[in-house]
Length: 429
Ligand code: BGC
Picture 1: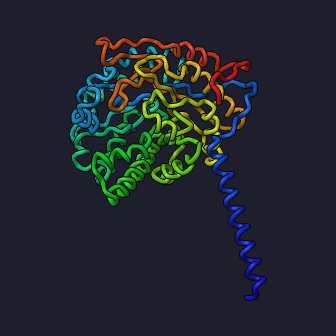
Picture 2 (picture 1 turned 90 degrees about the horizontal axis):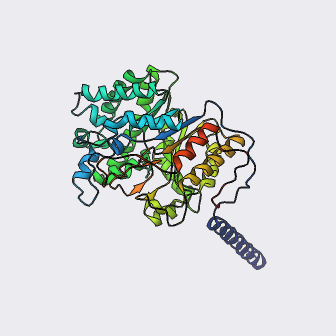
Picture 3 (picture 1 turned 135 degrees about the horizontal axis):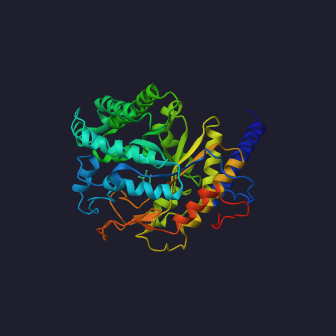
């Protein structure tokens, strides 16, 4: 090769390296700066009449009682956790809680069915516990509230744990049999269904508790995917118009979050996307690394504008699917004012503003469900309090439901079909 050609190609290579480095630095700088601000503009529309206004809960976290489930066992063998006990005794106070929900004006209540409660031994269904769920459905109907049923919210029967949980292919058939029973019994009551709550989060728990190696972990992932796919079909056999999904947790849109989203989608959503009638998200934070660094739930930084960005991103990724906010909320430490001064009622109003904005910008968001109506057992602790109504589960034997300032705020929002045209978000972006 002539000398001049060698030096030209060296020169060119250096330029390419320099441009790539500059581009990387620009990307890094842009990413570290965080997502771009969204202009605040006046709203010109409210939510439609069929918008889903709801509250969300899960069976294990609120029902209480000594049921043989993986989670009861986990709590029994972890004395450093708060004792689960009666939780907030939803098992017996559901009619009172439904009255509170009715008083808010919601039209949808996300409740969980406890597989462990209704099938305490393999193949033996408990009539008394089924009667409880029958009455729960009736109470909701009488209150004019539609249920959204979650079939699995991290908890399953002890006998499923004994057979190896989700690493065992038999658990797929057992889950589908349980789904068939529930769908047959409640398809006339419930139109909205969630198979697995946050499956991508269920998996790490399963890996650590069941001590799964790589091969079993991959098998578990396949089994959960098969279980969702089959449960989806079973529910549709009973109600062709049912809306079935599995909610995902929003992994944020700050630096590096795209990778986390990709990973969690790979774990579950990608394998079931064609069998999700809506994309349902649980939104708690837009900067997941901040939340992880902060640790305590009450230190996660609320970012209502991040919900808008999340909805826009999801719309671009799933343009044909409606979106449902299946859980969103904010925690305090035992009900104390937060160190950052953020108030639940402000987060609520701001989040509704940004949801309305997303709808105005063409995003088909069909519902907004607050986590949660009452405080509940936060997977080992009663200290994080997410409830619209606060409950001192450890200190108050009467388990009184005490309204927070977010109760009148949510009631007003629902009554008005959203926040008004003159509303401007309070929290900074
Ligand atoms: C879970 C809930 C939990 C909430 C707050 C969600 O990811 O589905 O069970 O209580 O987060 O931590």
